[in-house]
Length: 185
Length: 312
Image (cartoon, rainbow over all chains, first blue to last red; front, side, top):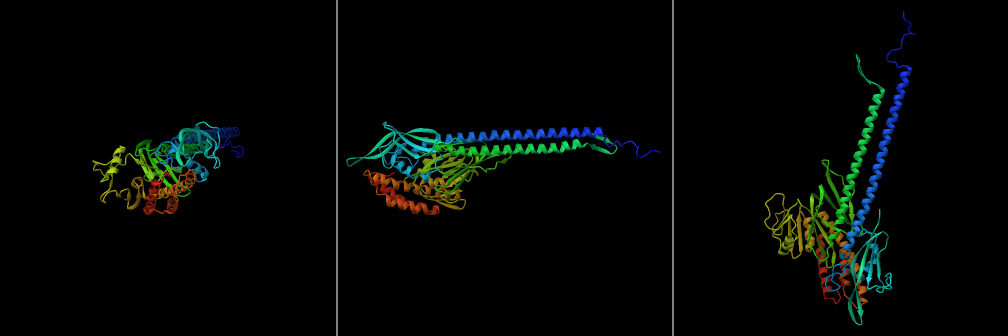
């Protein structure tokens, strides 16, 4: 007769050492899985940082391109251009009177051109630098249409206005620079 | 370990655990990669849309007009043009969707511009696109209108007036035909006489209407005629409102300029016309009313031409 209490253990029931080995394997597995998850999270974060820095760089490059292309054609925009009011039509000619009016009403055009600042600076004939206001115009040489800071692109333009000498009105045109700045993202 | 015995297939807990968590990790990685690809696609779409808008800057014409240029996008793409008339000048929105992995990418991100007026179909599809611009003078220059067509959309202009035919031929745009139109089903027929074409134009010396997809769009000036031909009703009407917003602002700018000019002995007597122009432009509700403004525009132009100092 075989005593039930002393019956050898079934093959399906793990022994204490087998149990410890299994636990160790599970622990190892858990560590490996933790490491894999951590690796994916880190890789994801790295990709995200890379992507965001690329986006910022791309946005700045686009802003720069916008400012660069805009400055070459902004003078022909109807808010700036001389049109036919100074005799024959002129390309890259800015109407100083119009631009002075524009600078006083710039809040209407605050985000219109998508640039940080716009300035027209007379460069010839050379004069002492003086900001234009309604009080000192036209005896000044810098009209700030939109104020702001940033990286600047510039283009040469003609700056024309009407002048009066005695009873006669004539066109006075100077050489100027149109400066447009953009924001770095 | 897999064990095979008389009772069948058996798997240890370690393996089951590893497989379940492995599948979970793989799914996580797959989701992450597809998200990154998705963000990349959105990034490309947004970048291309913004670049299209920026590349249109040089189309601000000097005095040359009617020049055609083209640009290509790698892969089949859709340029989606939207217009919003809200705010001071409204907004022109450009979005791009590209055909990737057998489906069109989502276009949640778009690029907006306040100083652009693009006339195109709501969705223009293709790889190569033609662009041309024309100044809109009403009576002074308001802006340059930009027209975008896909190279795969061919237009045949039948019975066009001589000035329009000359202009179209001079552009040398490969998808415009004024003579010898092919009898092709895909070709879009634009008729200036008759009413059985895809687009029917009633043209009378720069004024008239365009009947397209059962909708009538009214125009004044050739620039708006092209706008009606190449765009769709909703987009056209929205852009007309935006153009009138700009016209209103420019009228006010010229009114202020009169004060400057008058102080230098340059009185142009245009204040009454500009006040009327500003008032009509700000209240215009549809292209149907453009004719009313045209009368004021003509009057203002006459006064300006007669003035000792022209205002524009």
